[in-house]
Amino acid sequence: MIDIERCPHCGTRETRFAALGTVKLTKETTRKWKCEILLRSDLSKKWDSVSGIRLKVQCRCSSGPKKKLTCQYPLEERILIECDVCVIGGGPGGLLAATTLAMRGRKVVVVNEGPLMGYGIEGAFKSKSEFEITRHYLQSRFRPEVFGNSSPPAWRSVRAGIERSAQGLNVSLEDRLRRFGVILIGGHATFENRNTVLINDESVRAAQVIIATGTLPRLFPGIDVDGHHVVTSDEIMRIDSLPESLVVLGGGVIGCEFAGMFAALGSRVKLIDTQHRILASEDQDISDFLSKAMVRNGVEVMSSCRFKSLKLENGMVHTRLTNNVTLESEVILLAVGRTPCTQELNLESVGIDVDDRGYVPTNQHMQTNIPNIYAVGDVGLRNTPVDMALVHVAQAEGRCSAYHILGEDFHQSMDHIPYIIFTLPMVAGAGLAESVASEKYGNVRVGKYPFVRNHRAHAMGTPFGFVKLIVGPDGDDRMLGIRAIGRDVDSLISAASIMIEQQLPYTYLLNSIMPHPSLMECLQGAANIISGDALAFEEYEEFPTEGYFPS
Ligand SMILES: Cc1cc2nc3c(=O)[nH]c(=O)nc-3n(C[C@H](O)[C@H](O)[C@H](O)COP(=O)(O)OP(=O)(O)OC[C@H]3O[C@@H](n4cnc5c(N)ncnc54)[C@H](O)[C@@H]3O)c2cc1C
Image 1 (cartoon, protein in one colour):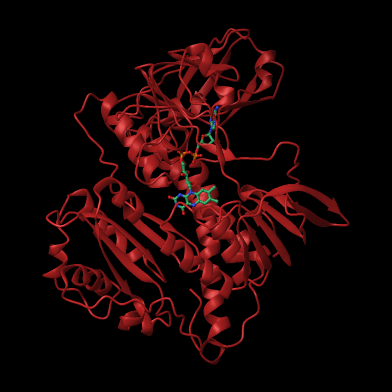
Image 2 (cartoon, rainbow, N blue to C red; image 1 turned 180 degrees about the vertical axis):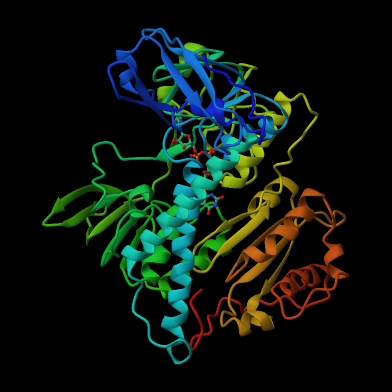
């Protein structure tokens, strides 16, 4: 195994990393081999033609000494890399664990298949970039007298721009990892035993292993995803043109986000869900409000409907429902949930427990039933008030596992997790939903403040939606949760989330001074309603119409 000390000039372990990368060999003369080292794994097949090779490696800073070394990999054997911790999966969860450990001197190998940062970039970043462009477009569409008439964005250039930004993020991320001294190996990992992971021609032996392999879109058996007409959230973020018509199967977070966005961009959208309401994980008032807003924005919401079959004919998808209705659309988006990437990890032979859906249960330190093996991020079985796949939850779990490996006494509270759903309008929350809090604590107190009373919301052209504070029953002033729906409600939840985590009483909000005009005043308004200092207001459902934006 090649293991070169840090570059004496810049201190990075670039050389060692490089030596573990792909080695491309070109025979210059019969006796001399030219080596080009690409910073990736997948050892070149050309190893077959040599029994040992002289590599000249140099740190990228180009100031350190060039170092010649001969590696004598017996060709029939795997290359063994020994390290303290091997992380399988380079998404947000795995990478946060890796960098936390590497910064504290642990030798860390990350094995990742696909683009770095996983769905943190492929899902969250790309879809939110599309969301922001859609919001700009909506402004011009609904205020033509101010912004001028605008046609829908050219989707091909939108996509190309987003891809460029995503690639830029990936390059700087790879660079940062290298500076941290993390060894990155590209490829698919499987367990050989509790301390050894296999990847192509390499094997990594580690004292601890972190599984951070995330999830993939769930598919219907027998339905082929062709990437053009039948797509999941992966493929819909790669299509170059806006579909004229779109059927979205699944009224959860991903389904609602894409349905709202494509309707705003001009597609005819039908949203189908088996439940009697969309976004069923939210309180009834939030999902009712969102449903009305979506209908107003042009989405046909079909709840309590079940998918039966689909057929592709003359470039159109015919989706049949169990009530014998058939829908015709250019594209169908399957947004019916996600499934954990655990099938090909060989977990059974190592004795790692999984539940019946394939998720890996863990304790509060993110340890699986095998103490030196951890599971973080979406692949783990979550036991949090908000059962959602989120980048920041994956990262919090990654950090938690790293601290436990480091032997530090660290507890990550998961009771306050803030989240944003990028529908039009946005939904945001932290802590317990009203329905969950009532089940747990009985007669919880709730204050709902409508944006129609808030000057900033009027100034933004979107005075609809509300913020809802949930606090304990009489005698218990702790803030338990917050839920909000409306434009830019993401700005409200971070402060509330800290209050919930710190178990602060909602009365702190009564005596604080909020800036004006701001949506934060609504938080104080909701607290005033609970304390009886303001009148409850129930007319917030009415949408103002003329001249207002839909989000
Ligand atoms: C369309 C969409 C929009 C989203 N929007 C948001 C949002 O706005 N905000 C938010 O917080 N979250 C959002 N999410 C969720 C978020 O992306 C995930 O919760 C987060 O990325 C999970 O991180 P992770 O580290 O658990 O796994 P992932 O991000 O899934 O990364 C896992 C990595 O492991 C690799 N891998 C899998 N198996 C192996 C193997 N055997 N060997 C080697 N590598 C392997 C995968 O290729 C991948 O690179 C969105 C998700 C989607 C799909």
